[in-house]
Image 1 (tube, rainbow, N blue to C red):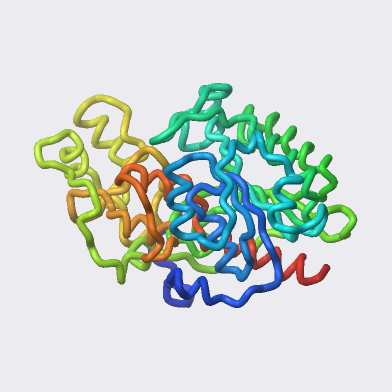
Image 2 (image 1 turned 180 degrees about the vertical axis):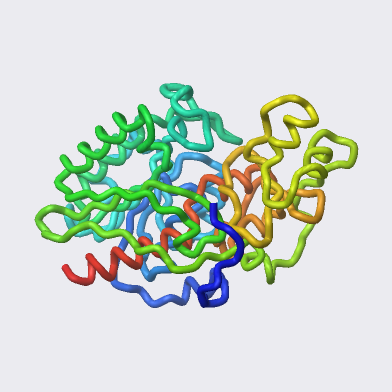
Length: 359
């Protein structure tokens, strides 16, 4: 875990607004995105100057948020299993092999470090508004990759994909991607070293089509990190949060937890139960713990409440004017499931500079 504020000089923490992102000059490269969620990755590509021509997302609540923030992209709401690569190419008016970058974050929660590893394999995963079997979706991504034949692909997944018995699945996926005609490199990137004020380790696959004779690359870590305090310095408090009610078990745990620590120590002491591992009283002097879907578990250090949605957006590098639709829980889920936009922007900038601009 990262410690207190590092002493390396660093630029002020800043997240561009949606209007500023819209005004970014096109770098000449186009993206097709799958498993797009609310559009975190797509926003990162736009921050890096790409145009996102097409996106696919199956979950209705995520579709609504995506449409509210990416009006210039084609949004396909079909189940990815029913989509043919020829249909995508027809809709974006490109031929096979002409697309610059194919992006995707196929869900693989069965191997998530923060989830229940492997117990959910083969079982439909429940979200706030739907459920879906997800553990075969990486193969659907590979099927579309083979049919589209983009110059480069970027696929993102949980860090737990390369740990323990999940390695067998990881190796099959890696070989599947290579068999599509790509040189592939995989690396675990922690978001905090990409300028995100949050610990969030993700497995990032980068592949380059073999005929281009270019090596896949990943961004180098920054020599500094941003803290929760950096991210929230200019965020005004709103009423978009959940109170921790005095007299409840959660209040007792919050009250007896030190700043920067998980509730579980207090839970063991006060209740004798091992629980509340992910519930953390965040410290303004550290990076935030990983934001996860389905659990509103990030608590303010001095006020008995969760973070507001605006604070959550800031530590995940979503613009303050990024529109989140749905209930409080659905909004938290959207952010928890998304790739931090500025993390993906770092990956996208590296791919453009080190690969696409040299082709």
